[in-house]
Length: 155
Image (cartoon, rainbow, N blue to C red; front, side, top):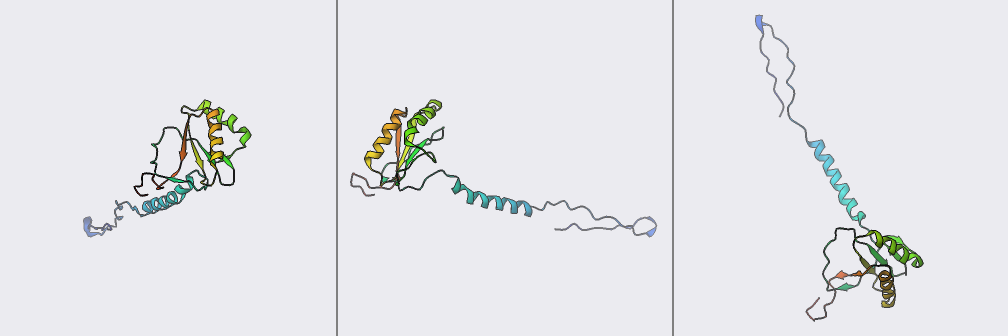
């Protein structure tokens, strides 16, 4: 792939020295190396960008909802009794006040409720009442897919 140098004999029989011609090929190896390193960085970092709290969601036969334009707002109830708004732990006494302020700024009154499977139904109903009092009328319960179906058609 190198460029050859051709030397011509000048006038009077003298041999003249000429510079070798510049190489006109681009070496793409460093570019490919940088792209592969960036790809690996993004592959490692992408799973860490998801917001979430480790909880055991109950499994149901329901299908996933379509994605919204606005970032979905979520409330999480953990097995140890904590209440998290997105990924920030909140005091229950201030929860309705904060949710009202958030609802005033949002276009949609939809919120997702994520509750650990060990949380009692009474506790989930209390949080749903607080969400309703704060102005959120569309409450989606988040579950895992693949749970039992009630029509007896398998899992």
